[in-house]
Image (cartoon, rainbow, N blue to C red; front, top):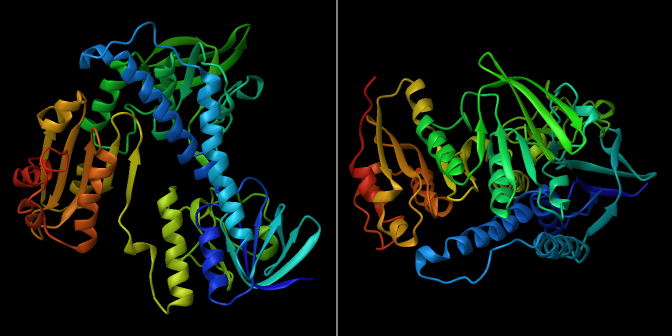
Length: 459
C-alpha cells in the first residue's frame, strides 16, 4: 500500500495549491481527482459562465450600437455552437493546464479515480489503497434538485448540463431567483430566448437589501425577463413541446409553459459517497463536513476545504481555505476563517459587488448605523458608458466609524468593491475613505463622496 505524507482529495481551487505547497515543503503528496481538473470554478462555474456572460454582453451591446452612433448592418443573431466552442476552448485550456502543472510537481503523485475511506487515514482509489498521516478533502458540491412534484418525470437542466446546450431555448423557465439563476436568465435572454424566473421568496436574492433586489429586478425586466416572486405550490409536468410549470401566486393559480427548465435552487456537497462514516468524519444535517475555525474535522489529521465544509461557497473562499491550512501547518500561524470578511459578486450586467453586512444585518446587530447611497445615474463614468442602472451603498458604525459593509450594483461594481474590502481588512475608519483622492473619471471616484454622505438610519 503506497504511503504518503498527505493525500488531497479533489483538484478544485484549494486542492492543487495545497498539494504543491506541501510538496514544495518536502512532503510526499498524492492528489486524487475523479473528473475534470480545476473543480467547479473552471469546469462548471466561474470560467464557463463568465465566458458566456461575455458573449451575451457582446450581443447586447451590438443591439445597442445605434445608441453610440455605431451602425450594425443586419440583424444581430447568436451562433450558439460558436459560443459554446469558445467557452469549451477556454475551459479546456484552464483544466488541462491545472492537470499538467500537478503532474509536473516534484513529490506529487496524481491519481485518477473516485476516492473512498476504508479507514480514517486510508483511501481506496479504483481498487488501490493509499495511506497518509494527513488527509485533505476538497470535494466540492453540485446542484441540488428541489423536491418539486413531477420533477423526476421531466427533462431539466442544472448549472452543469445547461452548459452543454448548442441551441438557444425557445422559452427558458428558471426555478430560483438568486445568483446562479439570474446570471443564466440574463445570458439566455440576451442570446434571444424568452425567459421566466420563478422565485419562492417575496423578492429576488432576498439576502440583499430590498433596494438592491428591486434594482436588479428592474433592469432584468427592462430586458424582457419575466419575474414571478412569492410563488408556492410548484409542480412540473412534461408537455409535447417541453415542460409546464404550475404554481400559485397569492391565491391565484398560474401555469407557464416552456421549452427548457433550469433548476437553480441551491447546492449540495459531494460528501455522500466518500465513506465518511467509515472514517468517523462528522457531517451536519445538510451533508456538509463539520470543521472548526481552522478547518479541522473531528478526526485528527483530516481537514475539509472549499464548498464541502459549508464555510463558503466561492472560489475565493476555497482558495482562502488553502491559505489558512497551509499557513497553520507550514508557517506556524494560527489563522482562522474568522479572519476573512465575507465578499462576493453577482455577475449580471451590471454586476453586484458585495462586502460585509447589508443594512438590514447591521441594524439587526443593534449598532447605531450610518448609511449612504447613490444612484449609478449620478456617476459620470456610468453615464459616459451608457450603463446607468444600479446604485452604490455604504454602511458604517456610527460609534467606531468602522465600515460594516457595502454594495456596488453597477458597471465595474465587481472590481470597485475591493476599494471598500481592503479598507475593512485594514481596519481603517470610513474617514480614511472620505479623504482619499480617486482618479476621474472612474466609478471608484464616487466612493469618497459616498462616504461623505453617511447619515444616521431612522427607524
